[in-house]
Image (tube, rainbow, N blue to C red):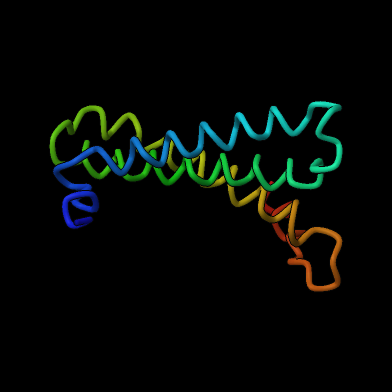
Length: 113
């Protein structure tokens, strides 16, 4: 049943589904900011991060299709995928690991500048 869905080399459906799920999480992020839903406010940040992750995975799946069928679009998307992965890594670092006793020390990056 799902063998055709995960053929991302020849089918764009999985990337479209991931984009749609990411858009739904973005809508949930907006809705959870409403004053009437203050009881569920603690889920708002989770919806925002999940929205970003789902859209990045959808973008990655669409790039596999473009690699085989639209090489010029693939080359343009390649740099944006790298930038989005850097932003995602930064979000995960600052939201999850920053301020804990097990945080990663990134002071060596300042020496590169």
